[in-house]
Length: 428
Ligand code: CMC
Image 1 (cartoon, rainbow, N blue to C red):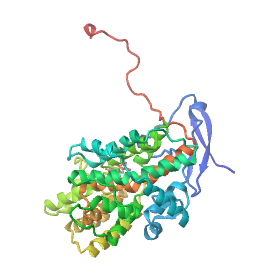
Image 2: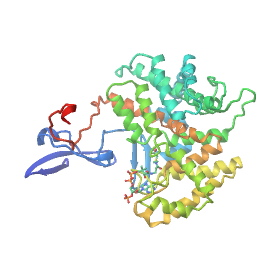
Image 3: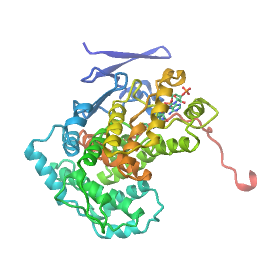
Image 4: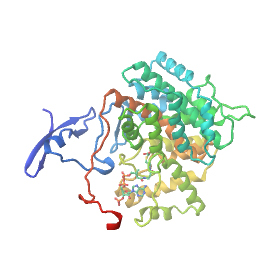
């Protein structure tokens, strides 16, 4: 028998159906709430208890530390898949066959040209501009060069738009970094794989032979996979809600990039390294910073710690920590910041404040250490996150449009002034 929930308001009882997900999650379906109760709404700041949609893309269980894309565990995907396969899986629902993967790769390569005039737009930004602001603007500017909205009922149009952005986004990200370094902008090398090409576009120097490095490619591939989707987080919800107004894919993604930028979300990876550097410069006293994080009168938070959903451990952080140690070891890099990170995390994991609040290292705690080892500048870290998250945003946008979801439009409870009569300036 299907489950229901009963709500009682002023002696009136209302029944609502309960929806059950494939992993037995329960959600009270309150679609009829305002209608049957004559306008009663719910209040849930930060949507801590609100499911905004039904989705078949990513499953995560914050208590058990489980993360799966389309049913496949993140651990297995990080070990066995490559980023393009994962992108295909997230967007289209199944792992690609060899033929599908080859076509996907070829189609992306075909679209990897970015209009030369985009360089003029990039030129308008000061070198000091934060790469996330530049990337969001360039993604939005792409619309001008690729006008026309996507007919979501046309599989072909949808596919073409997806392939276009997957192709052009790494070019924009690489250009954003190169502009800061006054390096010439180019279009990469279509003979290379997606991640290899991204790396070459970022790091090739006009006066040096580019040296491929499998170890670096593998580390990058893994990081991108680990960031590829995370269900209804802040940036993904932004992409879905912007897209729900039938704004185009690129416009929705541009908004998602802006949402990701914040230090409580993707921007945390930059904030973590800056925090670790500050602790190092301050003599490496981790206890002092743990105490600052616990002090309610101090705005300092332990960046890279805590998560809205994970209340046990973040499985991505576990993989990244191991990977950070391997990458640094393989590249022969000794980074004192890794020791500070480990020290900080072991103290916090034993500390009552963090234990009670179930605060654990999240995906951003160790990722910056790997990016740094790979020579990626700190202010580019969140761009790397965006590159990884791109297929997830696309998959969620596509799902939202295919399910014909209504425009996102939350309600509120008004707490302002009641009706007042206007007074002219002389009467005030
Ligand atoms: N350092 C110190 N205290 C913390 C921290 C932290 N990093 N995170 C949470 N708390 C405390 C918070 O003060 C509160 O304490 P109390 O109950 O005494 O008021 C309690 O833990 C619950 O915190 P919250 O802010 O209500 O939890 P939330 O689910 O709204 O926030 C979060 C989750 C990720 C925004 C938060 O943990 C945080 O700000 N972490 C640091 C930033 C960070 O690393 N963000 C990356 C998140 S993972 C990747 C991503 O989303 O992009």
